[in-house]
Amino acid sequence: MSQYCLPVSFDYDGRKYIASMGPFNHSTEREFALTVSRKAIDDCKSLGQLKQVSLNLLEGWASMQTAVQSLMLENIQLRQAIDKKNVDLEAADELLSQAAQVIEHFQCEQKSAKTKRRLWPW
Image (cartoon, rainbow, N blue to C red; front, side, top):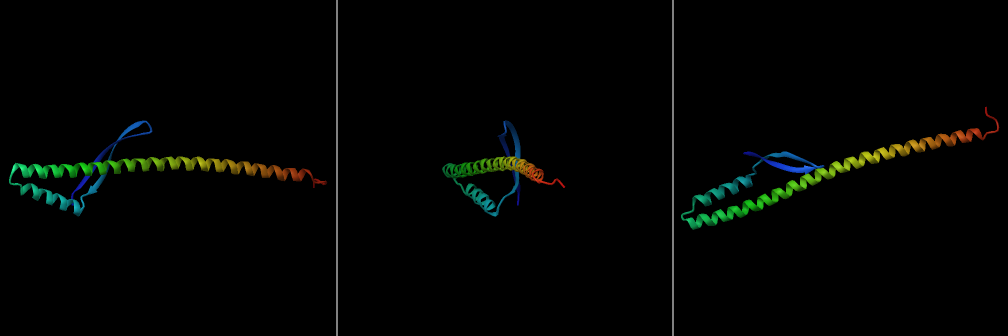
């Protein structure tokens, strides 16, 4: 099976990035579709037949491009959502740590206040 990669250009956090998705393997279904398409082209006896096969292939290619672009956009959006979730989790962890420190400090003050209220300090 042959492999291929897709170049991806995207903007993230105000910066433009170019990355590569893949490598991907051609599936057996894809190899079958390529074989059938090659046979359809080879079997053309006239320009009219070739034109019809070419239009069918062009429509199929355009549909695949649309699907690939949608998947790439979804992948980028998912990565951005995961990055945002990680930032939110770090912020929540920091807030919990601060709350724990405040509670600890408050408990220490309460214990110290109880100690001062005793009649006998020893």
